[in-house]
Length: 351
Ligand code: UT7
Image (cartoon, rainbow, N blue to C red):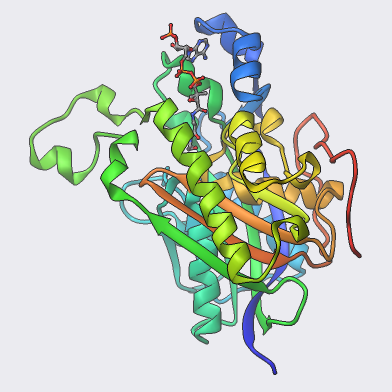
């Protein structure tokens, strides 16, 4: 029996041109390449040059996803970001205009590092509800613009970037159909990841310290939550789909820390080659993390047509979630950047 579904037809990622290695950070801050590599797995990250902001990186990734889908138009644009160009208005309408998409509905979704999974679910819902026939979903962030320059911990982890997908209406039986989602939040832990100032809460209390506009994170608690929540969500979705975890070919989880990815992997009983990893060369790119890792893996062949893929995110809010699909045949442009993405040692591609 046919069942309408949102189907992945285009994918692309983009990184800004300024590369910062761990040694570059060590020249500026009290840190070392050894600490960053062993505690996080990150070796380098890319950041925007002066004048480039989230709309700019979003446009580049959006353009690549549209080219990958072989289309110049979509019915709706959903942009996941927590570093919009301005607190108001949303950044998505400007991105839609710059991509020449016309007067389509365009809006932002703010769920920090889970943003892309939330935005994907939103766009898929618009398609299955017949409100839209196609969608461009972009995850883009420029956290380098909100980090405290003196904070060695956050500077070591975060990088800028964007990733995007194109969805079209199709059938659930098609390769590329989004088969299910698991979404959740826990606002009682909102203080673990926050930019305290700049919003209505501080303003209404008359508080305005310049440093309050910097991003803050309680690393250890976030770490523990990330492992538990991403494991929970992935397991719950796999169970709902009747996918034994051994049958999942690739888990594309939020790229925050290699130790988090390994812990999620062992929690779920996954082998190393089932985990997609690109954080060593891009860092934690927040809402861009999952689509960027997927785009790089699709280009390198680490994710191949026919693979059962789980996407999984965790971030501020707290928020977390997962999405599932059987990967389709796509043309994905090579990601920019000087280092080639890593393919796993063995590949279990079924097609
Ligand atoms: O994307 C949203 C989700 N975000 C995440 O998932 C991030 C999750 N958290 C983490 O990845 C880790 O908690 C961090 C990488 C942020 C920190 O690693 P950790 O092993 O949890 O270190 P810690 O915060 O417990 O700090 C241990 C020590 C501290 O020094 P003392 O107090 O023991 O003397 C830190 O000051 O490491 C120190 N430290 C550093 N040292 C050198 C923190 N950052 C650095 C650094 N270089 N860059």
